[in-house]
Length: 269
Length: 146
Image 1 (cartoon, helix red, strand yellow):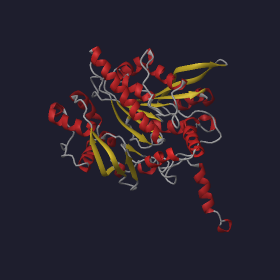
Image 2 (cartoon, rainbow over the protein chains, first blue to last red):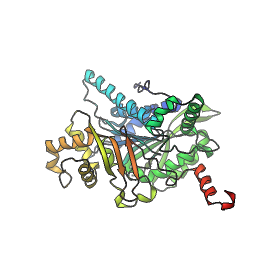
Image 3 (spheres, chains in turn green, brown):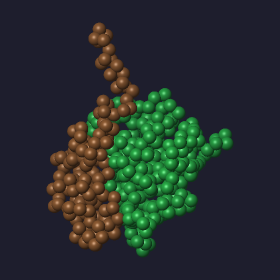
Image 4 (tube, rainbow over the protein chains, first blue to last red):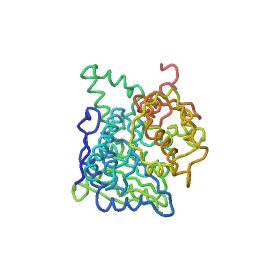
């Protein structure tokens, strides 16, 4: 089994702690069938220039999934040279992700020195405080990863303001009262799971952005829970015209249904 | 935030996406830091195809880097070690730690602090905002209510 990136430096007060859904992501990306598919997809061909892929994760949390993709890029994508970029609405998660991904790359590089493999070149280029893919250029993303806030809830919490994400106010939070800290932490944690109607409100925003933000060879992996009605979501994507959507990973049977699935979304070529 | 990032981002305001002036975003008051990374010519060579060269030239100029070649290196120029080294230094080793990125279309300023840029929009520019819809409704209510 490939090593899980270290997240021991992350404070989980406001950040989602890697759980079953995160691990399903790691297992799916590194499964024999998925890594074979991705490796073929991102192999240089005689007709196209050999271009380094950009891997983007929306809502990185601790950064464990993006770090895994970066550090295990040879096993997953058949390439030692990927660029990674993460977004999250919580600035703390951005700081954590930067550390998680760079540390995972460094640790993999140190191992390959002893194993005499060609060194890993992958580079984490940025963690951005942003809502999903909103700042990304059209056609720029080769691989998009999304483990959404998928729990059905009455409302989706409001996105944090610039002030709530200011490094000085985040430091000031160390001195705030226990109850104020509890409220602020609970709010940031609610952003990690509260998905609104059918748990799909944030996921729908991301799905809407996919045709614009994905490169022609691009592919998106989106995790869904049973209450999100994965079969309907896949049908909807197929209705875009020229798009495919298949379940490529699943875990946890519940009354004969998978509790969590990962759907791969890509253009027909 | 590595400089190469500027080649992949644009204004987060939806209405700006179609405007050519929303890319590249313009660096102001940028504080840079160099972080040494192993130079891999092949890596840089395979990054060049995905670079918007005009955009990168604007960015390089704003950050005070010696001007890049006028057109994107192709063919034999891709074997020019010096060009590849310059690009490695600019794209991979240079980090923007403080400053802002400004949209040439709407003028919105995205702050960069401790190497992390903030692309969250104020509520009147973003879409999702239940509480603020209520605020707008209150603000639009007849003055007798307030």
